[in-house]
Amino acid sequence: MSQQVVLIRHAKSSWRHDVADHLRPLKLRGYQAAEIMAQRHILRDAMPDIILSSPAVRAYTTASSLIAELQLESGLLVVEPSLYPGDAKALLALIKQRRESRIWLVGHNPAMHELAELLAGEAIEAFPTLAVATFEISQDSHRLIAFDYPKNTEL
Image (tube, rainbow, N blue to C red):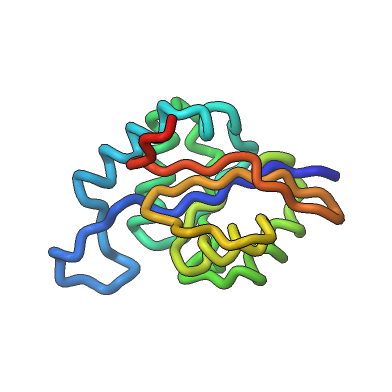
């Protein structure tokens, strides 16, 4: 069985609030980045069967913003505790347990960056906020299809 997996790092969050890490909200710039990325083909060409999000406010809000911008069904969003803070190998095992064909994971660095490199089989220079990496995964291979982020000007 082949799967399309989209790794999404949460949008830019705010440090201005005196709250626990998992409660940090998005900055205005984070919402603006969600609008930008929702217009890009990397997400429009990879509509999900399920969206697994970290329970952290900044990740869940990122996922919710993308759902609203792309006019997806809110029922696609499922909170996945293992995405906070996350571990690349554990997230890969999570993906392999899922039966959906098109999965979005919305989480945090360093786990998203490490998982992207693990799946790509090579170093990825950076995985900035709201970076999106799309992979084709089969039983014995992983292939990076696309990589994009809000400040990418090479479109």
